[in-house]
Length: 350
Image (cartoon, rainbow, N blue to C red):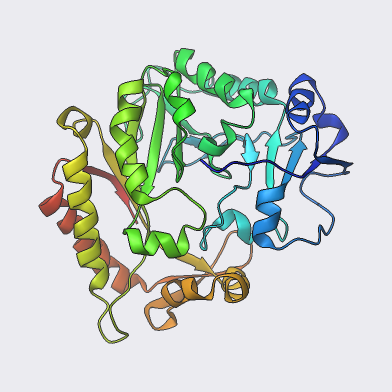
């Protein structure tokens, strides 16, 4: 885990409840600055990665909407945090904010109250689906990495306790970090952690400042032993080759990744492990930003001859693999999974 010690702490007045003050007290040497809005920060005079390393924001989440998902989870819960220490080149959260440090929301009780109210409006018993056969599932980490957030606020443990003890709800989140402190908590199978995986050499280029693929895979058995349900995300799947005329290298690299997973995960863990597969979607604004901060990554991410434009729900232009090519790649990926790790069910792929 990164040693996150912010030098600047920004806060909104309504974030300074008991939890907000406790978080602030952890950083007595940080420069303190009150701001009007947690999502409209002043120009901080720092580069992209410096902001993520040196700044922490405390805010109050005002809009506690719960959105239907149907993929990783049944629903997307209100955010507990926004932003991440990592600087992944394709991160959709970074697309929408010029200045994007970690922001922790301190009104955790209100957020959990919104989830509790929501889940009690849903049919029970739940009709089984691919997200979970028993519980209504809520993704708690769509805009941040919960493994990082867990070390910054006891509010995340409180959230874990909420889902562990709830008779109808279950939590899930994806992560690129291994936080060993989380192993001391037993969620009794009611928190699903999804380790994001891709070929190692690609991860080193695009998963900036995250834990290694080897470390993530090695943690799978440990988290299962601690009481977590453990899945994996093959996300994003990036298509590349050894030269521009041959785009097949990604297939060989994923086979190697699958074999590494197969050799590491114990049989009883394999029996409960499922996967999600998401092919790359990139963004025009992020492409331009990456040309300045991570141009090597763009050689893999921005390949117009393989991609087509897509208007995003936020009004920006995204780029994704051509739909006919993508259909073939999905078929190829599924076949490789069946050949190399047939025990790993694909919950969904797109």
